Image (cartoon, rainbow, N blue to C red; front, side, top):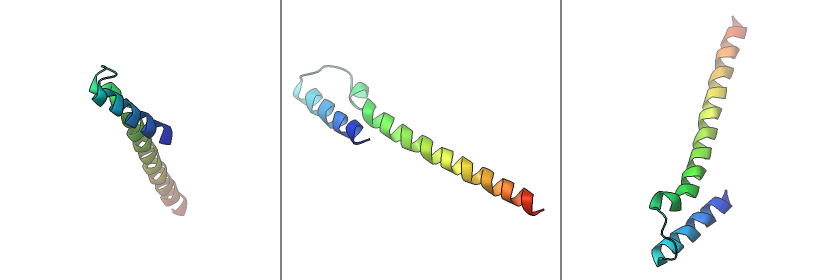
Length: 61
């Protein structure tokens, strides 16, 4: 994930200095991917914990 952060900084510097002319959302796309991956991991973890709790309650009955 450090590569995505580094790529964002490089693209940001290139955009500010005028070397590249792509849109801002493309400049921040590596950061968006980074945040999306971690958000997906959190959601997956919450779903797994919730399912484990439901299964645990069913086994106790």
